[in-house]
Amino acid sequence: MDNFFRYFMVVFAIPLCFFALSAKCRSFDQHSNKLSHFLKISQISASPSPAPEASQPASNRTSSSVFSVLSYGAVGDGVADDTQAFKTAWDAACQADASAVFLVPRHYIFMIQSSIFTGPCKSGLVFQIEGSIMPPDGPDSWPKNYSRRQWLVFYRINGMSMQGGGVIDGRGEKWWDLPCKPHKGINGTTAPGPCDSPVAIRFFGSSNLTVQGLKIKNSPQFHFRFDNCNDVRIDSMNIKSPTGSPNTDGIHIENTNDVKIYNSVISNGDDCVSIGAGSYNVDIRNITCGPSHGISIGSLGIKNSRACVSNISVTNSIIKHSDNGVRIKTWQGGFGSVSKITFNNIHMDTVRNPIIIDQYYCNAKACSNQTSAVYVTDVSYTNIKGTYDVRSPPMHLACSDTVPCTNLTISDVELFPAQGQKILDPFCWNAYGDIKTLTVPPVFCLLEGFPQSFRGNDVDTC
Ligand SMILES: *[C@@H]1O[C@H](CO)[C@@H](O)[C@H](O)[C@H]1NC(C)=O
Ligand SMILES: *[C@@H]1O[C@H](CO)[C@@H](O)[C@H](O)[C@H]1NC(C)=O
Ligand SMILES: *[C@@H]1O[C@H](CO)[C@@H](O)[C@H](O)[C@H]1NC(C)=O
Ligand SMILES: *[C@@H]1O[C@H](CO)[C@@H](O)[C@H](O)[C@H]1NC(C)=O
Ligand SMILES: *[C@@H]1O[C@H](CO)[C@@H](O)[C@H](O)[C@H]1NC(C)=O
Ligand SMILES: *[C@@H]1O[C@H](CO)[C@@H](O)[C@H](O)[C@H]1NC(C)=O
Ligand SMILES: *[C@@H]1O[C@H](CO)[C@@H](O)[C@H](O)[C@H]1NC(C)=O
Ligand SMILES: *[C@@H]1O[C@H](CO)[C@@H](O)[C@H](O)[C@H]1NC(C)=O
Image (cartoon, rainbow, N blue to C red; front, side, top):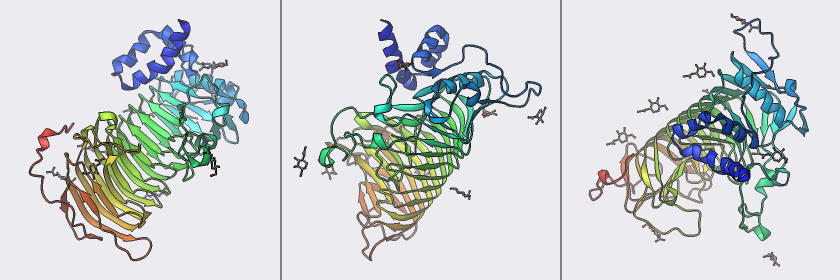
């Protein structure tokens, strides 16, 4: 029974909480003995006891206290397991009355196991990373009883800034080479079998977060993932993994709103930024993306699910040497809508599919056509210039047969072939909208006005 309970809490209760209303999550508070049990078995950090003395004098009560992991027994030689020290330091910082600084000091490398840092904390917290942090080296070193889906998780934190000049090294190499990863099996095949690989940094059920100035590299899977969060600001980040590293999205957001992603440089083996269902009010500016798979809304509507995404803008950015530029991708058979999307002032350098809507997204061999689709409407592409990789056309607007895309507006788009002189015609399918200015290449395939046969009120506009 005890084992069952543990299993239940770790495997089911956490994910439940992601999707459930906050009341569900709040019930954890009301059962704090269960909670502390739950915390213990999953190395979740909580702080049931009063904080130990901070390392700064308490005389100046308004000054922030610094909780260095070294003061809590961390070794920082890159070999010792410093998980417990991080956990204890977190508990202390989280319980501090004045705003606390959780410090990962310079010149040290800390090895930490998969952990969950839980709030709420008493006051705003600064998670200052000046040294390096890293997980165990690959799947064989990952303890069997720890989650393989996430490394560091921040849960129910309100008002935290993660920052510093340090490095987060995900040590993803051995995860990318698992035989289950694309082309990593015998003779370049993909072998079946469990393939979970950890997201490096995950925030969920949290709000008012800032992540800035850090370098993060070589995540086993997504570098950052934000679920069920709001009020997130990501600034001046450097995210880097090799081109061939599978599923290493830079920043993935889902069920998260009011997000700002600014001034960051991302190169990896998947999307620089990916925006999943339930996301709205997302502002992305001054991103240099590539090599990568571009900036993506989706994939949405998997397994006939409902997805609502709106008010997303991407401005003043550069996308280079990438498989896609700005992409909206949906599975067939989904519901909901993607609306009020603005792509403005984006420079493309040797990008395949600089502008792409794909409502036939499918990563299996074949997906059958279905009648429902996530409705795509009000998407504007303005001032998108540069070059495209001639292996595919510069514009690809493939909308559902039954649910057309509407109100796509295109102005000041100038895309030239990166190699040779061959101009490829844009591709459109069931795509409606307006061309506001002459474009290069010219777009003749966009259908004008609003589709007569299609009644917009038949679709789920969220
Ligand atoms: C995993 O097992 C180790 C050693 O038996 C133990 O110290 C640790 O607390 C366990 N962790 C979890 C999450 O159960
Ligand atoms: C001590 O508190 C005062 C405000 O009361 C603040 O101006 C000062 O910077 C604090 N000192 C330190 C070392 O943080
Ligand atoms: C957000 O967090 C900061 C501390 O990081 C705090 O000063 C601020 O008041 C918080 N804002 C809201 C709206 O909670
Ligand atoms: C791998 O390829 C080699 C050479 O083509 C072949 O002899 C061998 O049978 C293949 N192995 C498997 C498991 O398919
Ligand atoms: C854009 O971001 C880069 C860092 O990638 C930064 O150096 C530059 O100052 C930013 N530009 C503006 C206008 O903020
Ligand atoms: C759209 O998102 C921006 C932030 O990116 C926000 O300032 C604005 O109020 C949002 N618009 C609507 C209609 O909610
Ligand atoms: C699905 O529909 C598209 C557009 O009509 C068509 O090109 C494609 O061949 C169809 N796929 C299948 C599997 O029927
Ligand atoms: C069409 O899209 C533009 C820009 O995205 C928006 O300003 C406008 O309100 C939309 N028009 C309709 C009829 O929805």
